[in-house]
Image (cartoon, rainbow, N blue to C red; front, side, top):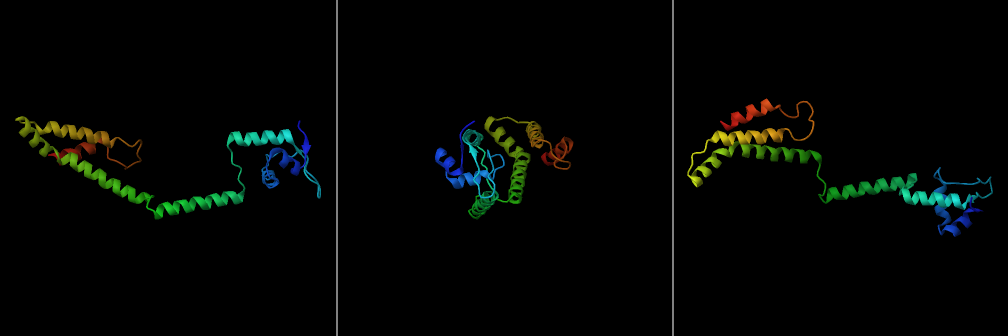
Length: 172
C-alpha cells in the first residue's frame, strides 16, 4: 500500500497534469482509494495508481473517451476522403471489373496462342509439333487457375468438366 494523496499531490508525484488524472478517473478501472463526498477531494493510493499507469503503458491500451473516439473516427473519414480524392483508393466494383477483363484477356491468350506458338517452334527447330500437346498443356494451366481462390460460392466458377469442354471447344 502506498501513500494516500489528493489529485494535486498525485499530479506532482507522477509529473502528470491534474486534468489528465481527471480524464483517467472516467475510466472505471482507474483506482480511487476513497471517493470524496460533495465538496471533498478524492483520495488515491500512489501504489495503486502507479500499477494502473504501468499496466496502461505496457498493454498499450489507449483509453479514449467518447469525444476522443469521435475525433478519431472523423479523422479516419477525412483520411479516406483525401485518399479517394488523390485516387489512392479505387472502388471495389471498378477493381472487380478490371480484374475480370484481365482474366479474360489472359484466358483468351492461353487458348488462342497455341497455333502461333506451334508455327514458331516448327520454324525455329525444323519440326512438326503436334498442336494437341500444346492444347493439353493450356487446358492443364486453365484447370489449375480455375481451382485458385479458395472455396468459391455456388456458381462462382464452372466445374472442371465445364472448363475442359470450354477449352477444348476454343482450342479446336
